[in-house]
Length: 378
Image (cartoon, rainbow, N blue to C red; front, side, top):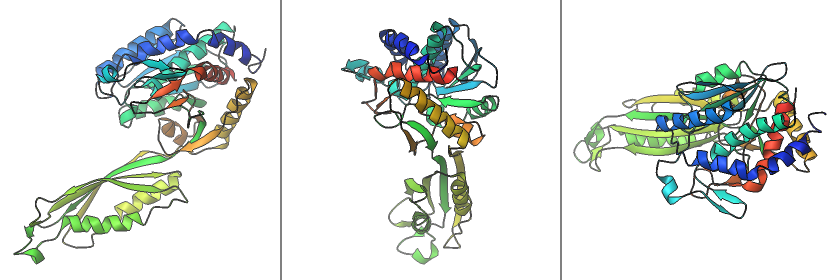
């Protein structure tokens, strides 16, 4: 049997286990894992590893991630990439407990992205139940700090990705119908500080050099750099400064975020920002921060992966569209290294990072069958 012809068998097997998958998901959701409490994330990682161990994986618990390996066919491994941390503080479950209303299942972290972890487990089990193995070895990497920028895990993710021939990211699909994500914006975050000269606003106004005024002038210029046609957006999200209305402000700062579809635009913005000169020579500008995630730009190889996923979906009678998204994931890192990367293979649902976070239970088995089909490809 070919990989494609096995899809209906895998789907039927998974549909018979939907209740079991949901129960496993509930157990992992009810282990709260805010990024700020790494001990809790590691405890979930140990539970996840224990479940995968039943299927003969080889698990390694790093400081910042859980790495697991499964045997498969020849070639460079397929990397399944995701995260175990969530944005929700401990205690969120008390006010937003697991609940099912129709086909919607609500819970903090269920959509972003613990459902994707359960899908990886059952995709591998579906292959085994069909009497086949993955077309290539499979490597899984679930990091502990994605929600806060992957600062601790990025180096490991990049190192692992360089060993792999393709990357499947288990983040949720885009929009209400779970589109595949073929492009993501790159993200850069900056802190711009202005150091001026304090003075009495009434007695010695002309002796002062306002840090606030300097930043206002700079921000007016920066706002003109936004280019919606190219997808370059710049958001001054936090602005602070000054010590009193009767004091010329000696200090002020702004926190900026910039996003772009293309690495060239991201790098050009970075250079332009760092090249700014003070309008008032008495004020000193200081810029820190920089590019956090490079863009996930589509390539012929990644688009071929998307086409293969669409063909497998068609075998199940599903129409699977693609989309670009302004949000980032760890797939940004792997794509920037040149690894063919397909994102958004996780759950269908919505409400990420909110009290309305949910998945569609009816989509769980078909999406897992799709993932199994991709893993079966040589």
